Amino acid sequence: MQAMFADGQVAVTLSGEGPPLVLLHSLLADRTSFDRVTPALGRDFRLLVPDLPGFGASAPAPGGLEAVADRVGAACSSPSRATTISASRITRG
Image (cartoon, rainbow, N blue to C red):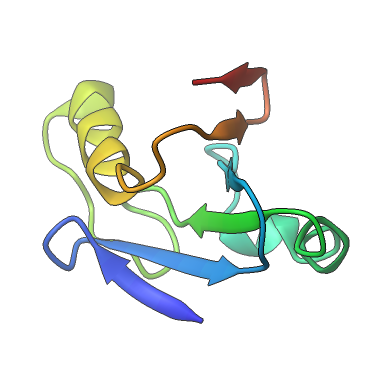
């Protein structure tokens, strides 16, 4: 299912069941970069796969990386504990 969050500014694909897992694409792609792995991950996790601001179906976020981080944080704020996979690291919140 696709939905808009952060006041309609961030497009997010939601799928799967289980603990929340947020997948963040690199600055050279969009959320479709995870299409090959989401079916398998969705068997064990509730996936939130946003298009970062300015990519895919998400609106740009003027104000640099801090504004991008704020907008993505607002879009993914519903999971109380989430594991985030980005191109550079894995974190658990």
